[in-house]
Structure formats: structure tokens, C-alpha cells
Image 1 (cartoon, helix red, strand yellow):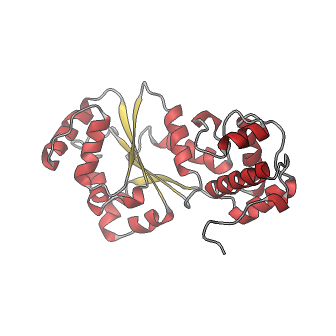
Image 2: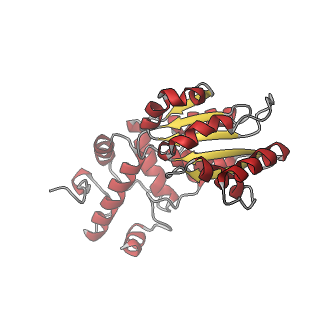
Length: 264
């Protein structure tokens, strides 16, 4: 089916997929502000916070930010928060810095605190799905930024997660961590105009410069998806399949495939 879509619309690659490179990401207002705040924050802040609804494009921001990072000054470490405790977090950072982590937590912590101050490039630890970190990892984050009361920021953590991460950080046990977070941003869904640009951008980046979705179809997609990028991708991809099967070159509102697998 993928080849049928490519041939039918003259694409060189599939649009609305994860195949787009970080340079090809559409710079919406929310995307641009998120990147600007992260760029500012890594220079001297210990912990940054990036939140937003599921599918709004947080991981896309992280990917683009890593790509644009000055590797002469920073070492980006991308980590998923999936159930990581403090011990696993220490070990994941050490492994990302090309050090074989010790088996047990305490030796890993000692290695962490001895290695970080000696680095010439500042580690920037980007934790995606940070809402899934165990309490022990979140509690230890504050301590992981302390190096003998050094005034210079030796490591920066970027916590990226869903809105429940903000609610969780308000709990009393995380108050010391929250007090360290001075730079933060909550991403919002795309506006109607941004959704229109997003759809056209993806089809053009895939090799077809002609508008494939009618204006009314793009408006309906925005209304149905509420401007959430991942949901836009899903509707557009299903609609391209639908149009290819029906041998249609332009997708109008009646051609949109809005059903979910569990509908009906």
C-alpha cells in the first residue's frame, strides 16, 4: 500500500510519518518558542520543563533541538523516562557519556559525580516521557545538579512530558526540584492556519508541490484533530490511502477518512 501511495501521488517518501528530518520540521509558533526557551535555558539553568498534550509535537522539538545544538559546547543525551529509577538514570547518563556504568547504584553515583565536573562539554540530558520516571529519579534530579556548591551549571536536565507531569511536580516531595525550574514552556496545538501550513508542508516535503487537500478538507481536519499534530498525521495518512484506492488526486472533505479502528 505504501508503494501505491507513492506512485499515485508522485511522492519520493511517505508524508505524515516520522521520516522527516529535524531540519524539515514545520516551525509553528509553539515549536519556535519551545526551542528558543530551551536554547536559552541550557546555557545556565539546571532543570528545564517542556510539557504539552499527547501528540502535540514535543518529541519533534527535542529532535530538532538536539540537531541544532552546538556539539562543541554540549553533549546531548536523549533518554526515555519509561519507569527509570534513580539508579537507572545515573547509569543511563554514564552510558550516554561512553562510560561503562557500575552494576550497583552507589558506585554509579560516585562515578557520576567524579566524571561530570571534568567534562569539557556540558551534558544536556533530555528525558522524554518524563512523567513515567519513578519518584526516586525525580527526587534525585536536584541532587544531580549539585557539585560542591559550584556556581557554574555543570549539567542540564530537560524534562519533557505530558500535562500530568506538571501536576505531579506540585507534590510536596518534589518541591525542591520545582524550585529549580525557572525556564519552562507548555506547548499548544496548532491553529487553523498552522494546520493548513503543516499539511501542505508535509506533502511538499514528500515530493509533491501541489496542494493535495482542498481548503475545506484542511479546515475539517483541523476541526476533527483540534490541531494536534499526531492526530493530523493519522487522518491525513488514512485519507491518502482512501484517495489512492479510489483513484482520486485531490482530497476533499467527503474523501477524508476520520474513523478510528474502534469506531462503530
